[in-house]
Length: 197
Image: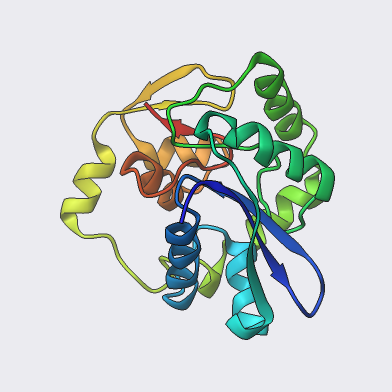
């Protein structure tokens, strides 16, 4: 137990996911739990699990980090060095209350601006049909009311955004409303760099 950087490696293909956590044991357990429940926030990783199974995923701590304030910079080091295929966002993000530097904000901005149409299309396809966690389900009236309430979020560049209809906002900004709901509830750290306030 402790803070550090971890990887999830596909032993069949060698492809990776890189993450950081204050409690790596708990985070790795959470990954396995969500994958098994078919509820993982990363659709790429969920598809890999569905295709290859847990036995072909290696969960390994690659560096212990004593000071949690160094977690993001160390995670970013490994994201840049290893270029992991399974990370949706190549910019280290966290719910530790740490702020991104101006350089990191600029990188995040550029990574979203320079995303090819092919990549956007692949991300879109990865969220459709039975791959979508809401496939075949309907929102309750209570959930619909919650979604229509006002919300406050920060965009990847650190600007505060307020709005009324999360569903509509997500459609207009090419975001997944289910993932953004999880961000607002504190279940996900971020979605495409967007965080809760």
